[in-house]
Length: 343
Image (tube, rainbow, N blue to C red; front, side, top):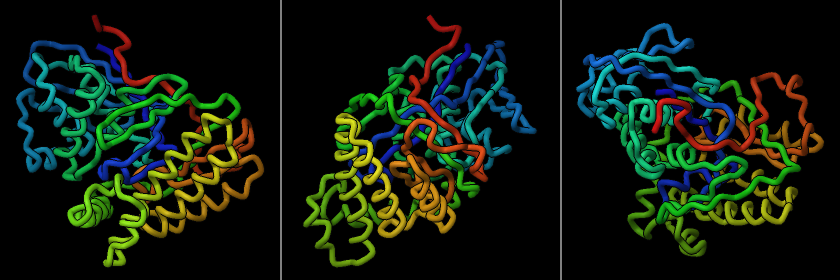
């Protein structure tokens, strides 16, 4: 089978998913394609042109986090975790081809997981597929990641962003305006969640939620009344970020791109100051982008701690040749699907 999964960029709404809040991610036309040919054997072997060593996995590998995180090369851990959750009926071999940069915050791991699951014969609908791949990523990395990445790359519709309410995992497709471009710029700082403070931030949010309930559903006045200053800042980011997601979605629908851009920039300030997941390099890149003519707004995208910045711009406003780090104009793409070999 041949399966393709897009990557994703989060337009607005970061660190809200595991807090039962709101986010507006968008699948992008950069992605990962996995080709798999069963051979009746006992091993799944995938080779990637960007990796020197293949992922060579026993068909019966257990979903044991300690065992999975010892597998080398490190990218094979994701393949092994998918094999252990999907449980294909046959081993085989195949290839992985990707246009997604690694460690940029564009969900290269989720794209690999979802494309591999489909290629190995997983026939689940998008929500179940996303849950399967989320469970696999948590086991492979030891990081308590949310479900946003897997869900948007599984359920996206071409030409649309996906508004997700993580309180009940309800979704609405939001059409992207035709007169706007989404530009993703790499900061030059590669991130890895297992080496970042992601788990620490999640624990801080859990501590606040233990006292008051899910942060994504808090009244702003309640969040601001938290006595602990650190937890108050974390909660304030989540509460105000959810409000920004609502405002940004409304601005897109009404064509208010200036207002949408302003909310993106406010989101970055909140992520940098209240949630402390930005870096000096990311801050400088956002400031540079905000100073370019035709740029409505910019923000760090994804978990932070490095990776990429996303900007909303007028068509052609940014000359990507003038950017010193890799940059891409991305369009809203369809979700993961079988290219061939399906029913």
